[in-house]
Length: 112
Length: 112
Image 1 (cartoon, rainbow over the protein chains, first blue to last red):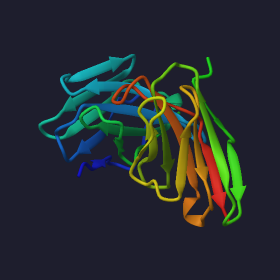
Image 2: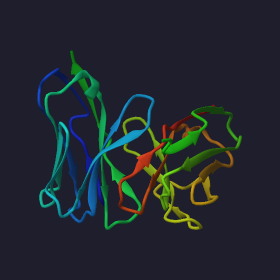
Image 3: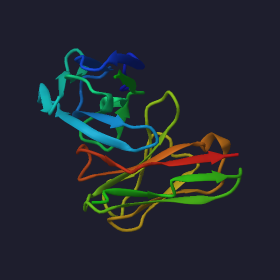
């Protein structure tokens, strides 16, 4: 059974730092992996989607990598800003089916 | 540009009451989903609809029913609410299974 883990559960860093959020999964047979952002009291916003054949995806200051063989993905945030404060979730799709398997998220606080 | 719209945003029910959560998307997506999010846990899929006219159970379907009314709308019904159904409910849609998912703002439901 696929399980997705995100460590740490919470992270607080000063503004301007580069940081890495981690996501690990137990079954390497995935279709794709998605990173989402969730702001308090709001819905989820898709940040990046990495297909199983890809190694990384970039969008602005965000870079997500995927290493299927080790069951890991990282989300790199460059030059962090207070507006980046949110909970970041990763989710794995298996064999293009309809069920995303979710991590519990990392709550990120960027201190001004 | 509405995306995925859920109603209501907040609801308090008494044990045993029924209610329907409404969801509509304007992106012409084929697939729609209902998730619940509980503190400290990842999102869990309740039901999904791969395409208009079809619905299937997800990970936690007990106590819920769904209707894919048309391509735009996918509703979730609680027939007899229980305190264990206190949660935040999210509707989502994607072009197809395994594609990027777009989420509504969520419904915070409390059952007392």
